[in-house]
Length: 139
Image (tube, rainbow, N blue to C red; front, side, top):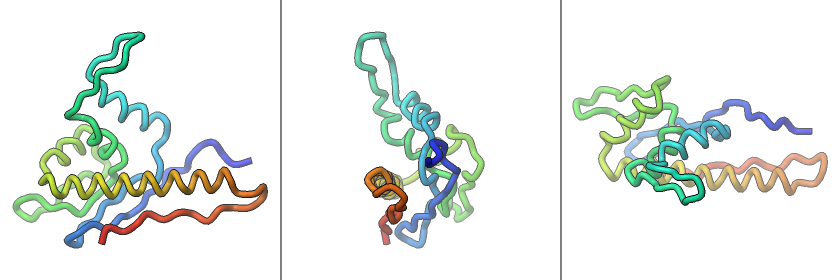
């Protein structure tokens, strides 16, 4: 029987301009819930939650993001490895809209590819291992 716990894995995704990001292959339920909680502006029992539009999307990006090759305006590396989600959010907010959109789109494509891989695992005949899906390159 397969484990219901995920082993931490990361994936390096190339971006335009020789940039790259390293992200978590999968989020745990705790990481997923934390990303969602940051997007909630207000919640009243029995009502739909009010979403904070400023945190929508970027919260998930910050949760997935582990490292990157991004340089600041002076050409120095913007270090995010082992940083808190709040520090990653601050770094993401300093990006140009175009670079943020590129990172967001790359992570979205990765999430879609992992969903396909999970479906393939579920639908594989007993005893067989489905071929892993791969994230599409942005380059």
